[in-house]
Length: 343
Ligand code: TXA
Ligand code: MG
Image (cartoon, rainbow, N blue to C red; front, side, top):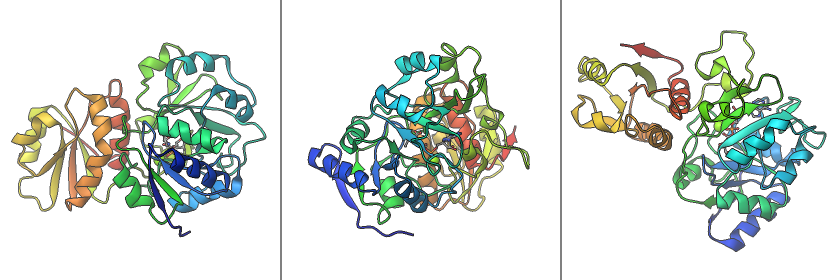
């Protein structure tokens, strides 16, 4: 593992952002806030710099990265062609929590694309992310700034805990607005395909892409030997140290199920805010039952808190899958290694 002296700067520190841009131009690593989660950035067009990302995260080299841009003029440099639907998608959802995959140009190296002939691009809306890309003067490759396999950092403290000593700089931008990673879809194949749900929902995307299909890996575990459309889908993910089990049922069923677990050593509930007070197990709540956006914002921090509390087994109440709920469900079922109890 590389070791680095990590400088901490605040998002409002303009001189600090300029130094961050210089670090990136010099091939170094900078952790920065986005509206989804914190990112671990390097100059996307410099293979040697991008290799540093994989090393700092402990990430398998066949799992490709997202390239972050500050303006539409960057896109034709990164893609062989810009599909006609992109314009309408960008008009509605960029800058924001949407990532689109296209056929990559020759400018994009094999390290950033994990050896694929496509590359994922996103234009973030967070002012610090935008200022950083502009200061660097180059597109920034950035995965979530967690160590590989762990929940993504949604606040400065979590980014610091995972990346201090591994990067040249961490920029403190407070808490992330969405708390789950961007929606990922591909236009490099027909029909277009949703690979990872996020705050931009399938319902919203279908207003532009009427033929959008949802990749089976969004909801289900891939069978042994099946190829993942998105390499990230095949790895155990978002997982705390605790053993997470997803429990599907009404509030009454969930409550009754937990009664049967009363007294179980190190057992915790991950529940909705409304249920917390009445449950027979120690618990952490991750937002209101009907509040998908709130659940998304809280989820990863809750998983980390459960580890801090020493949870052994976590019985997580399954969220509704509509709208942003699909993203919450997708992350939780991976955290649970697809272990579901249906009541
Ligand atoms: O919100 C986000 O997207 C955050 C912030 C920092 O922008 N980034 C992020 O990156 O979540 P990462 O690397 O943690 O997740 C990217 C996902 C992975 O599952 C990866 O396999 C998939 O996108 N991906 C990237 N490029 C791809 C490609 N060319 N084809 C298929 N999947 C791709
Ligand atoms: Mg990630």
